[in-house]
Image (tube, rainbow, N blue to C red; front, side):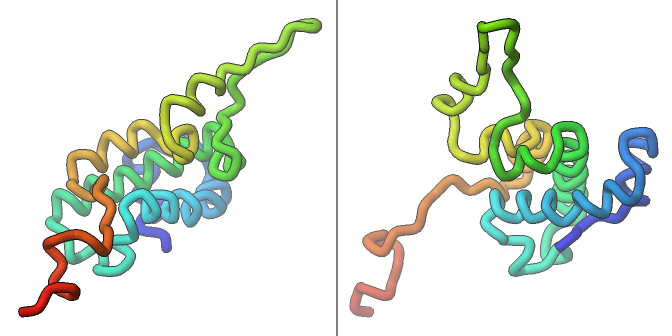
Length: 142
């Protein structure tokens, strides 16, 4: 689901970064990635359920993710590799080695700017719900 329009994107980034056709091909995967890391909270509850300032930060995160895909290509979403590394003659250097160890599977497929914006919203909840959580009432007699 796209939360942003090309007019929003060009207002923030200008029209030199990508044309409308490229934007239209990248906006849905970019917004889907943002939905994924926010645990689909906005997809379930709707963008209007958030405070206006949080809505703006969420949209800016979607724009940043779209710009990231425009710069590195959409394959970064599927491979997690942003084209780092080089080969000269018989010597090959792959700089993705460190990044694979330093973070989870989304590390290179996420815009650092998008993550920075979303950190301010509270939408990046790192907790993992488990059935043995004592705060859940379903297993305890009332």
